[in-house]
Figure 1: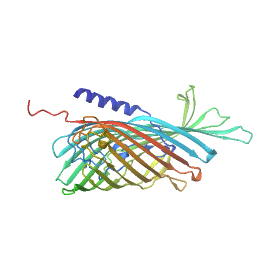
Figure 2 (figure 1 turned 45 degrees about the horizontal axis):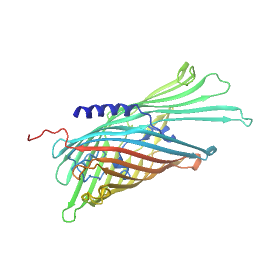
Figure 3 (figure 1 turned 90 degrees about the vertical axis):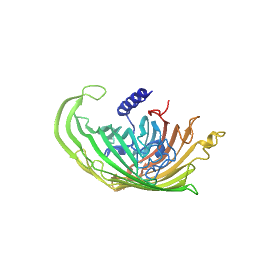
Figure 4 (figure 1 turned 135 degrees about the vertical axis):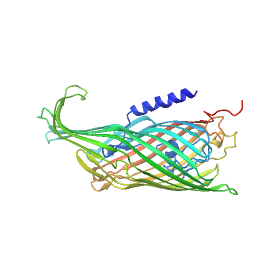
Length: 428
């Protein structure tokens, strides 16, 4: 049984790395559409995690590694996401849709002792996947020029997190984050009387490591079973950089698929590196709830701006922030006669002031979310395993200044298998 889980962990990780993810045209800027921290438990509650300490012994929190004081079982999570994006712009009254389904999270967590807990996770951090052709025509319908914009690649993240319970109320956590992958952007110009295509390609090769430090405090009133939770995280310490290779060349495609370049002539090449790929990030959250009954939390996330190279030019991204609110509700976990009384119901909402600004217009994002944790038939409050389902709906961008408005509905499905695995018996 142990070997099966280890092989599954490795093989799923391989497919996670190989898959293609769809995203917004705004992914052309920077390192693409961020997919990170899209676990079902977190996203169903609007993204709150910094002050979220699960009441159940089966849930490991990677976003704030300090929030695992109650974690006691070995947990294996497998999750998938179905994205549905609907785009609209006033430019030529254009509309389009994009759909994709991909493995979004695989995690293994286990307790080392009553005070020390550990977790391993692997998931996509961001991605690029777009192919847009823009054709300019004269009044008589003849083509003046044609531009093709393409993007591809996925940036993945592998994590190892350790939690330490200092006292009954105070905990610390440390998480190592390793980012790796290649991201490509291409802009091709074709003229009707030219035999060659002029292509501008940017390749970002990323291998980066940093740390997330977390802390949490929880005060439980034993008379009322009410609890107050305060949490904070900071991500810092980039140990590597992003290498950006820019190439301006002319060529033509020798195959019908348009993938094999022939007679390529280099006009200009540049190579730069950036050490602030993932700059300082910080989060602060406060939560309040009743033990094994309900919980509500508010959270604010901050990310410092950064400078990147985009088609040979410098692009400055602004400081950004995200405000989230959400929680969960459990009617009665002891009611085994009514299954839905033992279901965990989640809810949330968020607003994100994005780091991208185009033509003086900020590209912001907002949404609402909901979800359930459907426990397995033999699951109890001490071994809360089950089917996770979450849904997230919202919008990004705007129709102003001929920009793109993106509406999205994301469905997430996964399993959390938790039990006392991989432990030696004290008695025969």
